Image (cartoon, helix red, strand yellow):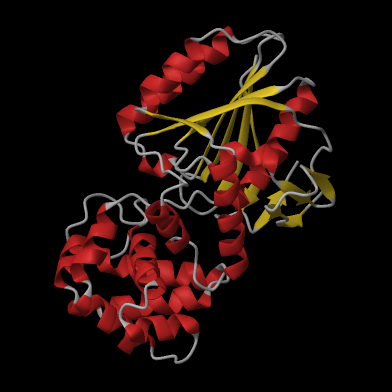
Length: 342
């Protein structure tokens, strides 16, 4: 943990530079240097409860600044993001000073990335699932946000030369693939639903703007892909329950599972926002469902999450009956590359 909460901005700046987002790295470093211009925001960071890295507070602040830049507020910040000058400190200071309350409100809300680039890793894991038993799958997603990854069957993929999905899809996902390609297996998704305490509506312009602000400003291709995924979600609305995940999952897993179908629980970059008691309740529900699984009604869990020391994002697959867990890959946090280990 950083020596002071505000130093999380510097730590995340280094992370952003390492993963190929130098503009975001420079914005966060400037925000750290100019934080005194925003006393409300500075106080929130100083008094942040728990681990600011796990709460992604730096990404919240970065998204708030990106949202302001997209509104050209203040003009110096908008100009910085358009590339017409490189005075990071001046533009960020102006934004912090004039929009302190706005930025503080963004810090109070949980990040909402709903990154569709992660769908490539989820699909590769589903190929492993159906490689065990060639059955159709029903998907249950925890922490669905706007549900964009529930629409993963509508996207086109290139996974190390293995292609999948409708060729005419406007959402095309082709991560840098490291290692051998995944199993080339057709995945038939026959049902998909998710849960979120505060589902996002892709028809709501403010929601779409919030999601776009969480895309790094130096990744325009990623922003274009998100816009295409939101457009698809408006045409094919994902099924998302507004509920507590522990209650919803227990109910869904207790519901009868048709014979000859995989039931697959998946989640991506949501575990860090789940409290200890909620995590334990989710694990109990999954373990109980796993104990009931058999060859006709198998269960799988796919997790795209940080490992315990937060040194790598791992793609983990657990299948029942049996309950064996494998780390299929390590991944870029937003799916830009996948290092397949199977």
